[in-house]
Image (cartoon, rainbow, N blue to C red; front, side):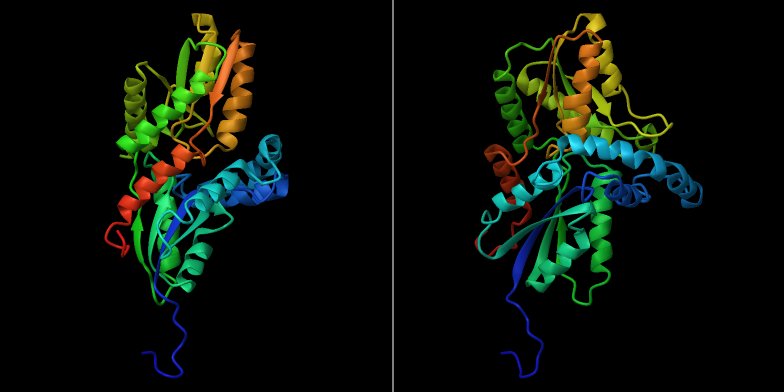
Length: 334
């Protein structure tokens, strides 16, 4: 029994916070500049000493890149906002009742809005004494998974009464993930009016230095592609996209791979992005639009981008399975 005058305490609940990378608030240069300033100031993303990097970021990049990026965002923006925000919101909504009335499901972005700290505090105020943080990155990388966790831990550091926290492990080789990917790719391929000469698995790139420093990301991507290819009965061409800056990045690069294929007799291509849980700028603009343009310009005849799992029924069921596993022991009906 709560004594008179005691602060109100909501009934105990469990929270699930799904997290993705982030997005600007709008497809305009000022919004993109704010987003890039936060994103590119993260030492997990750019591993250059701050004193050396910030003058470059503030003096050159933030005065040139936002306009170009805003143009790219404008090509994929919709009434629902950026595709990444729209899909992540839809995933959270689809999972709303997946774990019982005692579990609250919400979503956040590492950069931009809704912010991880804001949503964690809202969950705590709603009575969530236990929270599962779920960065939706199948392959672990310090620049994605770790920085999302960092942001959550920093928010908890400001709380007097902290909720217990669990984090979703990478699921790059989980049979549930691989099986769902296989079904998604097969379904997408079956809708094409051509048979691809090659299927490319394009993952977001990272500097080569991250591999040398011990980041498992490259190995995780390679294993995902190997397992996916084996299950599909085909050999996938693995490539890495979204290079930035002058440093050496993981290879081969997706853009140069696409441009070189027609000269080798590969004129019909399908491309899938297994490292992305939701379609976003990097898939819909970089791959589906610019990738197609460069492939056709090089002599390709047929090109198809195969969508991510997004909030499809199968994709949501996969997430429900993965998240239910991590909630074991917490739910009363588990």
